[in-house]
Length: 201
Image (tube, rainbow, N blue to C red; front, side, top):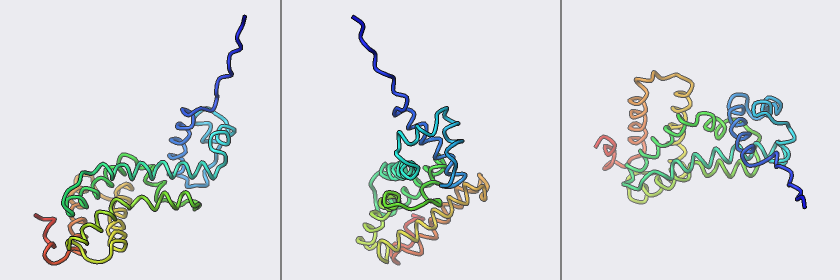
């Protein structure tokens, strides 16, 4: 007796991941208005795969951004516990290292896109590890200000440096020293008087 074989799944998880990776690269260069045609052509499929696997173009954009944001947060969560200064500096270096290894994802997370609740929620998580570390430092009297504002200012400096570095504005042999100088300057701006030289120590 012959047994009918099931039809092979054309739109599977492997294809979904390939589309996410290709779409991330495309979105990093062209923004959220990229065409689906070059996307599907690059992975050898059709636009029907996008709608089958993601439901809509908007849900594809959400999946791209959420994936990138999750990877960004995971990299920060791998930072070991330590003193406030150790943890904040380690997070700053983890953020820079992740961006160097995932430049397209970095552009996707913080680049232009059509906002949606899912994208907004994903982006809100990206600075939470840093904010937790800053809040701890403030509670211990190491930094001043409120956690949200201080985190935003520190992250603005870190993000700005990384964005310029990815664009090639800093010579490779000078970038590490410049980044350390930036972190030291930001620390001096937010540290309480008795901890202002903690970074140098």
